[in-house]
Length: 119
Image (cartoon, rainbow, N blue to C red):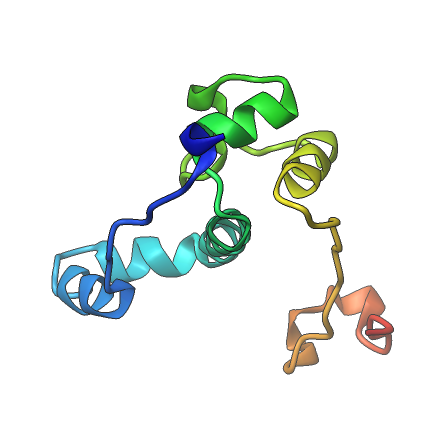
C-alpha cells in the first residue's frame, strides 16, 4: 500500500500567482478561467486530503494516470458529471454542485431581469 502514499511537493500558490500576474496577458487569461481554476483547486485539495497519487485515483476510477492528470489541469477538457462523480468517490468525497446568486443582477437577460436564482 506504500505506492498509494502521496507526498506533496511544496508549492506556494500565492507567490506563483503574484509572479505570473506580471506576465503580459496572464491576468486576463486567469480571470477568464476562474471557475475552471476553482474546480482544479478543489480536485487537488480533495486528493491531497485523501493522501492519494494520481495513479491511485486512476486505479480507483478505472482509468489512466494521464486521464486524471488532464482532469486536474486547466485547458480545453470539460469533464462529464459522471467523471467528476467517479473522481469524488475515488478521493472519499461526494459531488455537490450549486448555483450561487450573483451579487449583481445586471448579468441576467433582459426578459428575466426580475428573476434571481434561489441560492
